Amino acid sequence: MRTSRLFAPLLAAACFGVIAGTAAATPGLTERIVSDPATGIAIYGYDPVAYFTEGRPVLGQRDLEVEWGGAAWRFESEANRAAFLSAPEAYVPRYGGYDPLAVAKGVPAAGHPLLFRISGDRLYLFRSPEDRDAAADVREADAAWPKLRRQLIEN
Image (tube, rainbow, N blue to C red; front, side, top):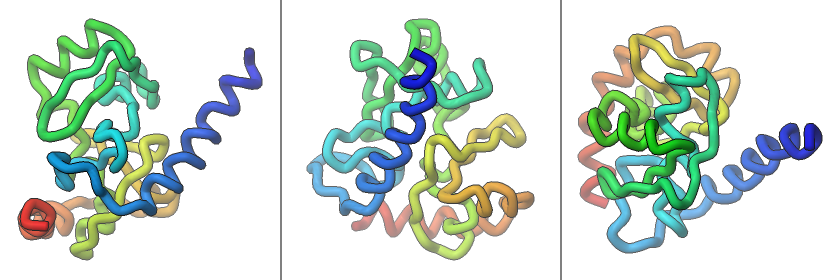
């Protein structure tokens, strides 16, 4: 069982690489939130509340899913789902899960759910460990996000 726990993040990372390189094609999905283009599941099924409560990424369960913001969100527990529904903006990754350094450059590059940081009570996802280590200041991303967000909505 220990081997499967170690293997799961590697499998998720491999799947993320394939998914992130695919253009979104599912009608009705939003581009403002990083989600699986085939299923519409936000941040590739990871529970956004668990980053705060457990300090680590945890995959959510299919039977604990809710739609919010044009994407489906999964949770590991009923309590996490309830917390999310009471204040979704507190748990949704900043910039919809796009990498802050890419956002600062005006590029919508998906962050990886295993590469995260919580800063200022906000969840940030990054596309590489180097981006995570370099992202000390998000002011440039904050300034660039409204324009990039509009572009994502219009496309």
